[in-house]
Length: 148
Image (tube, rainbow, N blue to C red; front, side, top):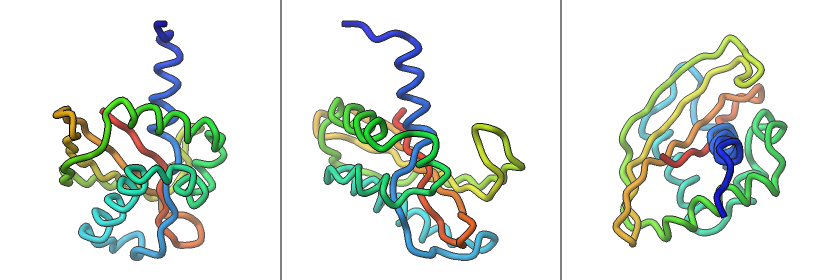
């Protein structure tokens, strides 16, 4: 059965905008250590590897939790990852910082994206993007996960 273009777009939006993992305080928003954020993104990806997608949503930024319900997030991430199988190798590719002044899709705040190149046991390679937001309580929390 073919999925509609809208359904595929919806799954991509969910994965791009949704929450994954709660993290302890990483650093002040203006002085984040790149090694620490790469490690935090790796921790989130490894939680997905271990099937702990629901745990990631539970600790996600409230901003992300408001955008996508937990069952929808868990299903979308699980389905996307099952298609690729277990991860074999993962290395970080890039880190991007940004600040949003606020839009309906992206609330105001400081954001960091970490991109990984991941090879799966089936030989396929994909890029995983883990996004973080510096929340009001001064904690960095995952706000998105996206496979390309």
